Amino acid sequence: MSEKGHLTIDIFKLVSHSTAQADSLDKMGDLLCTLLMAALEVKGVALYLLNKDKGELELLSSFGLSYEYLSKGPLLPQKSMGCILRGEPVIVKDVASTHLLQYPELALKEGIKSIGSFPLMLSGEAIGALRVYHHKEWDIVQEDIDSLMVLGEIIALGMAYANLRHAARNFIEVTSRIQLL
Image (cartoon, rainbow, N blue to C red):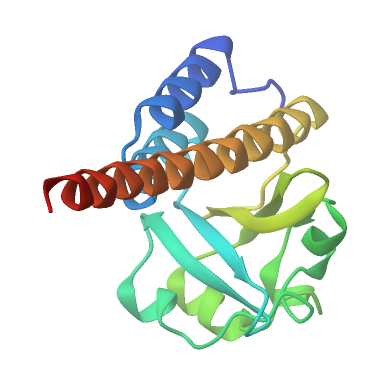
């Protein structure tokens, strides 16, 4: 992605459809990572959820990244592109020359040159991050930054919806068992 934005209305339709139809967070995350990696023509994509109790970003789903890279250790938001906690996107054009990454040497070993981190915002609060990993320096246009921020909000809503659907199914299942007694 350099001069012209890659996120078209068709991508938004696919993301909206996959978030609305997903019956689990895992399935939704896997589909979104695969879809966005192909649409953005990047090395990899990952979705992280913020675990407030541990103060860590926990991997939900990814595509295009090795197990070794993904299992590098705890990802602390304040040490790894921490602006997402304030609801701001972070673009690291060169992982070799930044202080914003917690594991820059592992990113280089993975073949990652640039990383974009976009907050997943729900009701004005960061609940996670969408990370986009590029194999070359990424000259992302503002239109795509704005689009990825909106996609982050759609994904966060989809996650909340999937959790509500799961809770409702569990409630219905439990209450139907009680009625049988």
